[in-house]
Length: 423
Image (tube, rainbow, N blue to C red; front, side, top):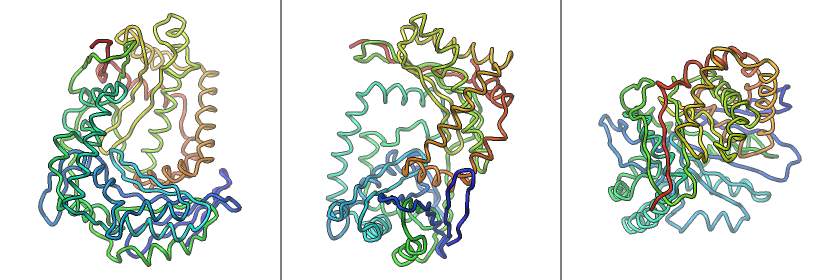
């Protein structure tokens, strides 16, 4: 494998693209007892419509998440039990654009890695097990639908987007998952769980060449084709709806305000937008911002205000929310403050403060093996080198942050989701 030094971060990373197209990344952490493996596919909740074998496939909402649950089943039993016998802690998640399986251990790392590679690459579904899982996931969906935190976010996505599948819940609905069959799962696995659509990231005191050799020995030799995906018609920055208000059993109104941003599709501009957006959030409503201080002193918020920029395939949005006596007032003040900062500028001293804070937060993220692996994977799927964030950070100016606020956080691009107290 080829090693690359990152002097500003004090890190060394090994990379190799195997013959089957899988990129293997090893972040070397000598003398660390913990070892971490992260195996991910560029396939998530948004990938419901795609072309396979020359024909378009329309799959139910929630199928990527459903497939993640079923991948732990093997013909011999369950991979979780095998990993537990070796002292490994494992889990998985599905987001809008990614499904990832990961484990951490201190011993038997390569044996655990082989188990991980095997069960993710070899699907095994039966009609009985698929029907059983439908009941389990349906129960999870019903539970989360009663959660105000989840409901306020889901309603915001419905407000913001008309065409993008980001408006659908990653887990789907009770009705949509009833349509899932073993054959649908096999088709989705064949389309997206191919080496060239995946990445393996290992962090810790591990041998890079042996990691690559294990992957070569277990995974298919064929790369698999690049699957064409349909995320709907390109949307502008005008929300589909301006507001959704729902009553639930909450003690105080809660809200999420969202602002549609112009997405950056691939490459370092994507990482640059993510960093710029995070700094814009700190400048606008971070805990040290003038707006946060004023709203808190007024009693308009209870201290729970927060948000960030999210990027998904074909879309990007800034969100901010919390508990507020009058969500419409707070949302309006956020827009007015963004207009003010875009027009009058951010104070130099305050800008330097949020700049130092943002960079420090990214550096602290390198203390987390999970954070490193996720960042590397997002970079691989997004077309950039995550460890180049210091160099990209250097190119961002105060004017860039002000322009981001001026161009994106406006009344024209805004939608509001509110949960109000009620039965």
